[in-house]
Length: 259
Image 1 (cartoon, rainbow, N blue to C red):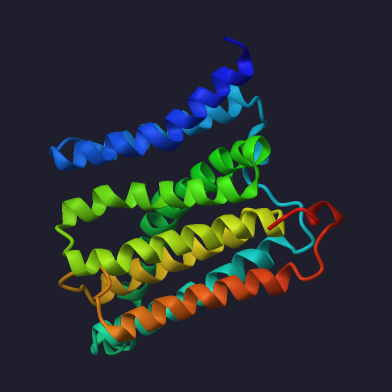
Image 2: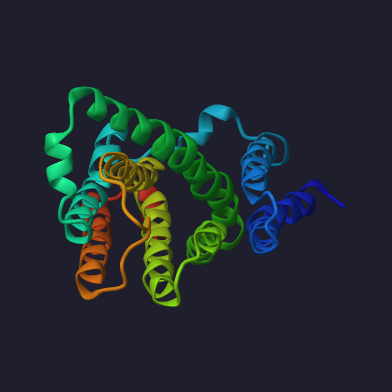
């Protein structure tokens, strides 16, 4: 078997087999979190050994916009939406934030950065929207690459939902939310020629959620299946998509074939 077919097989294993195995482990009470860690490590090995790409290429950004600008703009809608969701779902949430002592705020910020960003958002985005999306994009084009990584993004959340005992009505909110999030994030990578908008989206969403949970813990960590929640989540995703379009309205010449 030549190197290219081998790389394709490994790519499909990471994309399809790994999340399916994690779902079965979650259903059987197995150590699916350990498998997630193994997935991240295998993704890095795939990038370096199968794709033969340098480590510096992981933090992809060669579009017109500055990386820090993309990171901040990408985080804007999820942060605002997350604060609105927190205030809507837990009326005392904002009061708990304003009444928190400096030490509590510092601890909450530390948790948001460590857990929300470093342990979750950054490895997920690098693995899905860089290590997997890039070879899919080169082999089969943008529509398949964006769609496949968005579906994988949903699949990797299923073990958490299964562990949490998510209700059927909550699945009706969470699944479309994560799917559209993945589509917008993947589109941003292709359209803006950078990982950093998607990274900002994910870091902003996770950070505000962990921050609020640290100061005002909720009975359930998933969105309530009601009209205000659906409206807020839909609005923040639409805003993120509009920002991608706005930032890419004068694309690079190489972007002519981007979706």
